[in-house]
Length: 411
Image 1 (tube, helix red, strand yellow):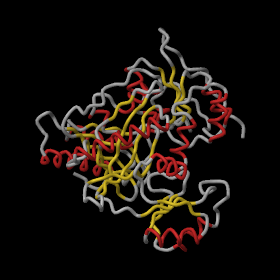
Image 2 (cartoon, rainbow, N blue to C red):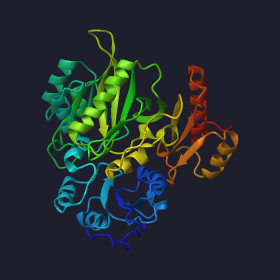
Image 3 (cartoon, rainbow, N blue to C red):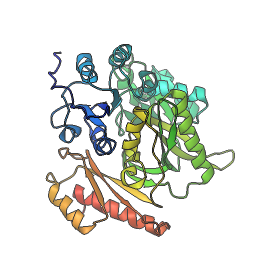
């Protein structure tokens, strides 16, 4: 494939301030632009198209393919550090850049544990991090053996490429995976087999969000409750209500330990299941997934914490001192906006601004498609609104706004 011609290098600010390159032009790169301005940092984004989410707001957004070494190499040549909007840059491209001395954050050695779920499970198990029971399957016999051991149904995942419920199946018989098993060993998401996991009987889903810099400084936000529907995170409650201090502390310490031992630089999201320990009947956690970048579970931090995940990610990859991750108030609620009936969102956006001036609406500049993440809305409580009643009011406001933008409600 011919490399895409790229525009001139990004303009640099006077005073020696750096350029941060982000591979991928999605909403995560887009939401890095406001804190980049505040930090006097210049962003450059390698975008999928001229109308990619980040390309609409970042002045220097050359179009290129993250899978093409020459595109990424030319892009990186003008950047002081390079980070990522997603985990899909091929290993050979990353290795070539690293060999040429490009500062990559996170490094390829760390990023592999977010790109490959089998590698992640092996490493976390070696570290003694609590995980669901799991196995690697290449044959139907492997699936049947695991099913007999942990019970049916079980969860099957493609080790690479899955997100938002894609590449995940809940199976009640080995035959349901015959189509996946038929392509095991071929190039692609199933080259190394299928990841099988027990179907965890969990109380709710949590997320721990931390950041770590190359010099080893680390910071952690409060543990949050993530509400999932159909494999998609629809709502985040920060902090997780009624989470006991011991579990919150253990989950935070576990996330910080993962970041340190894997050598993560930047933001790390650790998605977790809250469970009851059958031996003690006490609350515990199991790690579900890792993401080494800003994450949907941390969008609440834009308004809800002193330092947002996007500012912290930029600070971390530049090895600047990390900011304060403390929550600004007792509760913050974030609801995702999914595509629905309205193609023209601006009129509904205007209506919501007038109806609820305290609402913060973030739309990503994407075309409407049913079920597609188009943005998110955030509401938060003032210093006096710390009770459970206030949390429910915030949830209702956030849900109404998300549903109105989707066309589920019309008033």
